[in-house]
Image 1 (cartoon, rainbow, N blue to C red):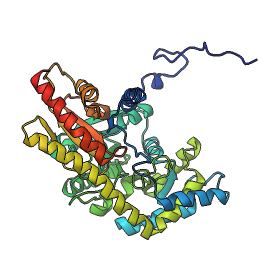
Image 2 (image 1 turned 135 degrees about the vertical axis):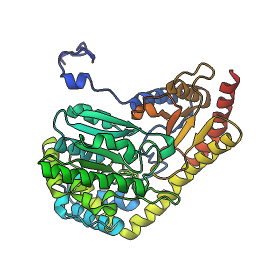
Image 3 (image 1 turned 30 degrees about the horizontal axis):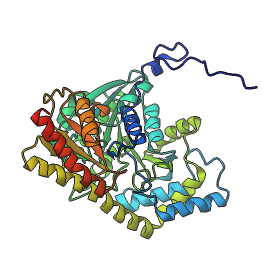
Image 4 (image 1 turned 90 degrees about the horizontal axis):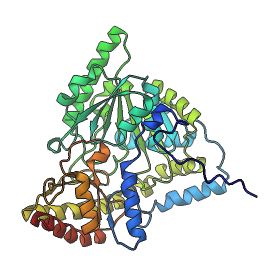
Length: 432
C-alpha cells in the first residue's frame, strides 16, 4: 500500500523550508499569461497566440537534416556524458561557423557548449559577478532582473523608448559604466524585434575599452559585456546585424557572446547553445556549467556539429525560415499600419530581427482601461488576440507597448485576427 503524501503543504511565499533568495524570486509573467490562454483553448476558444517566444513544430519544424542527424547519433550510441565544455566536433563547427558567417575566428578554448542559451547567460552572471556587484541592463529586456536577483547583484535599470527602437544609447549608459561589473545587451532584442545601430554600439564598446584601460591602471576588475545575439541569423529588411568585436576589436577580451540553435533552426527543445569569448572567461563558465550539469545532450551536440558544417542545407533552411518569419511579421505590421492610417491609436515598429513585433495600443485611460494588462485582457477576451505587455520584460510604465511573437501562428491566423483587433479597438474608443 502506497504511503499517502497528498496532504503535504502547498507552496507559499512564507514557506520557511526555502531560502530568502527563492522567496523573493518572481515567477514568469509570460507563463502566467500562457496559463490563461491554455484554459481558453481547453474550452474550445480559438486564439491567435502571439505570446510565446517559441516555435510551433507544426509551423516551424526543425530542419530535416538536423532531425535525421540526431536519430543517427542516437543509433550510434552517443548517449553518455559529453565533455564539460562540449564535444570537440561541435566546438570546432561553431569555430568555423563564426569565422565563416561573422568574420570572427576564436580559439577553441573560447567556445563552450551548454543546454541552450539560458545556461550560458547564467554561467556568465555566475562567472563574473560577486554579491553586491553592479549589473547594468536596459529595459525592456528578457530575464536580466531575475538573473541579477539570483546572483545577489545590484541591478541598474536603464529605461529605453521607441525613438531608439528600445535600444540604449551611450548617453543613457554612461552614468553607470564606471561602477558596473557587467553590462547586458541583446540584438536582435527580445521582446522588441529591433536591432542596435552600428554607430551606437561602436560608441558603447569604445567607452567600455576606455573604462577598462583606466581600471587596469588602478588594479580593478574590468567591465564585462554580455552580448546576447541568439536571434542574429533572423534579420530582415535593410537592417544588418553587427557585433561588438567586429566594430571595436579591442573589446574582445571583455565580451561574451550568447548564442545557439534554438532560434536559428527553430530548435528550442533540442537544447544546444554556446558561449563564445575570451578563454579566461569561457574556462570559468565551463567550470560553472560542469558543476550544474547544464550540458546539451551528446547526440544533439554531435548532430548539430554535422548540420552546421552542412552549409548548403543549413543556409537553404535559413533562407526559407527567414522568409516564413518575415511573412508573419509583415502581415502584422501591414495590418497595424492600416489601422494607424485609419486614425486608430495603434502603431508598430517595422520588423528588423528575431520573431517579434513591437506594437503600441495607446488605449490607457479609454473605456476604463488603466493598465497594459487591462488592455491585454480586453484584446484576449474580445478579439481572441493574445499578446504580452512590456511589463513582463521589466518596463514599468503603462505606455501600451506589447510584444507580439509569430513563432506559433500562421499568416492566415494573423490575417483572420486583425479585423477582430480593429473592431475591438473601435469598440474601446466608442466606450462600448
